[in-house]
Length: 359
Image 1: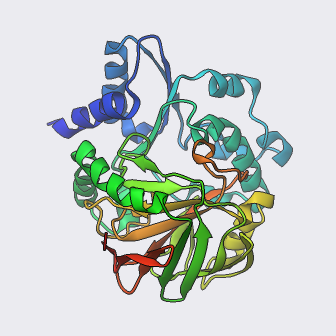
Image 2: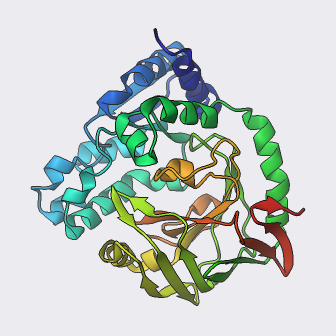
Image 3: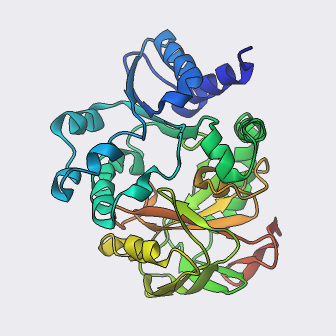
């Protein structure tokens, strides 16, 4: 029997996240395992008088891993003209991640991964600027469940519990917290191994009430680019990107730039990311997790960064629509748990302790 939540999920993406309009060209990039959701999504887009442009592959378009494994780096880093055209002309974008194997990218060497990041950055540039409606989401697969340490049935319940929520009500709750940080010039993050300050002066939050990421449930900023000072340790959870895992990451910032870094494991990948380009050592994002339906780390950034009582810092590309000026082929979110001994301060006032707001 078909799960009725699949239809509700597709409707949420079409109506709440994108508000698809007649005549739009909605580009959907996904993998074969998402078929139940993909078919509901395509039908729903058709009913709105719009075009569903599907890019289906074993990994997420626009860079095919098998091709990239044999292509020269200088070829990989430039999208072909047909893909640049699609990137330039799409009216909305949906990404449905439904991997068979979350470690596919491990097979590429650092040079080819950097080249792929550059090509993907071209595709993502309109997303990062919020020029078009977009949403990234997932469909339950065994690979995602295994990464989370759950059965497929358990992961499915977590996913729907995190996405099929009262988004207007959660967005209003987040608005009240964001108002306090909007009024601050300086934010300080304190916790085990961590004492980091950064400036939000002149920057305002974007509140993700499920319009862009699904699940949503965060508000986020583009910190002033040269403001980060101090140290942060991501000791609670591993940081997972492109199927590669780094644990015990420690970053030291001076004048907004990472000047020292180490990791308990995965240090080679940490430095490869930091050396992506000039902007990779600066912060592109400060995010505040607020989704109460996500209570445990799942080795899945789309979920982990929304966990209530956490913050995340992204190295690299910033969101230009909220004032960000940092440019990079990297956007790597690292999640810090503040629920046990963590604090958030705004201009010297304690606003969150142990993951609980004190507003």
